[in-house]
Image (cartoon, rainbow over all chains, first blue to last red; front, side):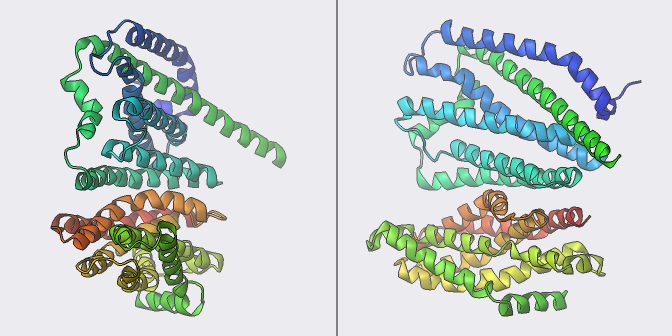
Length: 249
Length: 218
């Protein structure tokens, strides 16, 4: 009877990851190329937004993964704190830069879309602001990993930071909502900014189906990157251990 | 616990550098903002609540790395860890000492600096009250950051990178209370949320800080 915890063994993890990785990466490329090509070339322009609407195929999946990467880090941190599996801590570490890049992609594509549509690169819309804060959390998390020398200490500290940060990120999300309502009430730009909300209610299937393909592609891409980066982290740590042993002996 | 509190306060006052520095920094910051935006009273009055809140927050940040770093250097922290006092209690006392020595003077000075930025009349009590309620949260969150970075050499910059995003909710609600107070609007909701955040961080965050300190002292 095999259990999930078998993969806490680094060797077993690497073996499985190596077997799975080409499939995940390949599927991700297929989904991304297919979804993006479908979205960019084979969907009609929106009657009001023109072709700018097509940035949705990058923006929404990236934004989704930016949040889900943090959730995955939170889960991995909890597993590390509770069961002390090193692979879990390393997976959290591996996911952080990927999540940070996803956040940047979401912010950048949003700005590029916002310039022609809202007439501005940046507004202090709740969504935009909370993503900026999320990005800062990623930066702090990555910096803490890099700053602490001892591996186990770093894993413990970053795990706790991840937990505390999750609570504060949620708190900021609602605080920012409140803050902005206090400033602009009922601006129509802000309502258009609720992109993700709109997709569920309004976007017709012509746009939605390629969007889901793209989302699947981004999820697979994230999994592939995290698997790859976790392997790299495991190998780097093993190499350090070997070098340390050599110096001793 | 009380002995530790008195010791920390005494150190803050006598060791120099910590006690008055935050206040001086606050004063300079407000003056710099005034220089930056120009002498126009109406504009200053509009941004005064936000500036005073951000200034208080930054002045708080300034002395955070002193909370544990000095005790760590001379070994006091190890002694405290073996003392018959729960780590959570130590963290809480440290935060309280930081609040009394750094944040409370800022809170008292804030209305005075509000005068310099021509804060509108009804804003003063609310500015004072919002800072009084909000700064304990700043101290407790800051203590968490200080505990997190205590083992890192030159961790000051990292400390601010980690702590400042955590300050966002407190700042938003605190400045909102002060702004609404200055404009004479209804401010019950942000005030209650601010109080809620303060109570929540006071109750929960010391556990995280203590866990982090234990890891760092391992």
